[in-house]
Amino acid sequence: MKNLKKVLILLFIGLVSFNYAQDINAAAEAFNNGNEAIKAKNFAGAVGFYESSLDECNMIGTDAAELQGKVEAQLTKAYYYNAQILYKKKKFDASVAEFNKAIEAAAVSKDTKTAGKAKNFIPKVYASQGLSLVGDKKYDESLVIFEKALGSKADCVNAYYGMGLAYKEKDDIDAAVESFDNAVKNGAGNPKAEKTVNKAKSAAQNMLEANAAKELQIEHTQQAIDYLNKANTYGTGSANTYYMLALAYNKQSKFDDAIKAATQALATEGVDGNSVNFELGKAYEGKGDAANACASYKKVTGGPNVKAAEFQVKEVLKCN
Image 1 (spheres, rainbow, N blue to C red):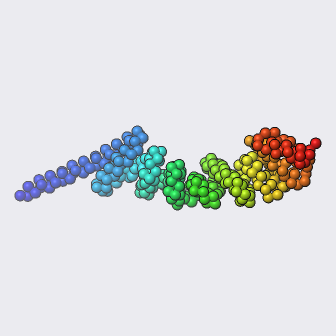
Image 2 (image 1 turned 120 degrees about the vertical axis):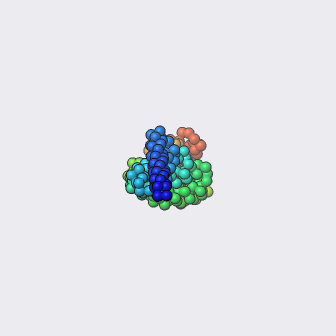
Image 3 (image 1 turned 90 degrees about the vertical axis):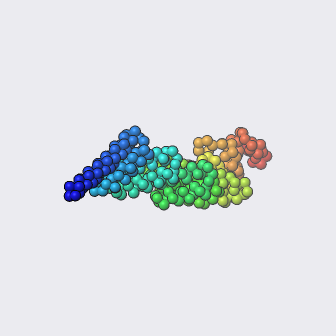
């Protein structure tokens, strides 16, 4: 009986040893397969292999501690790289989820560098998702996503720019201006944000100019002037902006301001000299400066104001 017990014990020990060897071998094999997948840039596959290996290590316990540390380190990187691939495929929600897995895994593997990069990438994903929704004309949905971006990074330039575009399309001019201004402010001095800052300035300037034109059509000259002066703060003032300012100031009989705006327009690339000189002539005429008024009206040689300018020269001012 004693011999039988000894045999059974030895069989049990052997079975345990055999199973342990199988488990550790399976964990090691999965780990090696993950490494091969990483080399092949099959990051989703690598994640699967490393997760399988980690499960095996957890079942084995302390005896697999050394291998487990290696698996956790590689799994952190695999999550991060896979999240980037998902982002490039515009699978935004899945990408954010994978970046969060990378952050959680990094806390275990103590990979602060990868954790930091993942945290910085998440607002970029949200901003891209929001801009995609703006492109699909889903403006309210985009604003929700942009808020998530700002929740991850309070100074996210791309998110503020996207919010500006969304509010612009919703015709909420004040909110759009505030968002574009935040993009400009938070991106100032950052070479990586320069392109987005310039886009925000241009979008704001174009939006304000377009709305100023609408206000002029309904004789809301002061609102138009406010929009145009704000547009010029972005440093991208166009000849058309200055021309409309001259037109608006003439309507308010603020002739000195009109002359200043028209002069700036004439010095700006892409100017329609005929239209601007007509407004300049009106401003000088309003001031009682007949000589400069005549000189400006005579420069109107094309466009819809030719006959009106000729009339002022010949019949009203009787220019030489």
